[in-house]
Length: 374
Image (cartoon, rainbow, N blue to C red; front, side, top):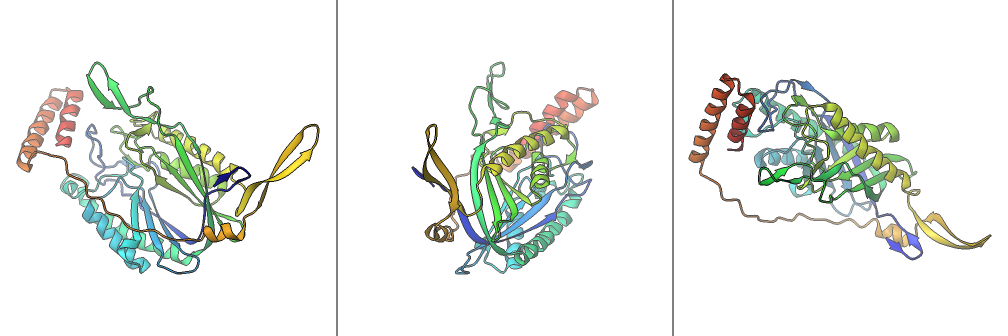
């Protein structure tokens, strides 16, 4: 809230608990999420994958809490997602409508759709997802056990790591998905600071819109992409957990991306982390307002601003707790029937194999990518 005589950070006073578990997928699991990739199985781990479970409820216990899980995965198909949501609702003893599961959308975490089970590494998918569900229950138990009253205050700034990714390739006569320096990007970075009743920092939340696509087809390692170094840097500085929530990033990707080098992903993560720490440093003391305190006569007449405790009215406003679930129906795109798609897959896979046998590996990669699209 901004008025002529005060500046108040957006804030909420809630009951809050958090739990974290390691959900790093095993080496050897099906990993290929890129049509241009030539591997199937993950060959190693760059950084661990995390699952953060947050439980947020009203201070007055007037309604059921909300449970949110954030997974370092690209996403799951609806049936898989639904099973995890049911398991989490049982663990938290809340209705499924009170559970939200979101994904970091890392493109280096593995790909676990049911149609990959028959491919190399796919035999590990079922047991891995069952393990993720059990670990989410453990994280939920941690979150419920750590519930306490907190204040969450937010501030926003900017970070230029993300860029518009709709580039017109004149020679191709079409748009490609790549860095477009001519179009401004949404660089908004939002940071939430979570403090306990004594003003001690217990966590941070970082919300940024940028596809985790630093690592691409040449990468064979399990990785959270830029999020790993982002969290590590913030947690090293604050000594408190940092939760990343991906923003609406449809047309946004890293300026420097689509590479196989994990060091570039770490560099991108540190860039966002340093910007987030700057925003965090600019927040005033918890539960205060930056207010005009009057003039002081000096060489010039100075206007003095001070951090002063928030009013009881403002604190009451910050304790309101509400929300809901909303469904939006969207039409499916028109697409060929299954038989036509199967014919395309067979044709392009045969073409890729023939090109590989002739040593034409770039053309073979392209044919393999067309098969993957189908």
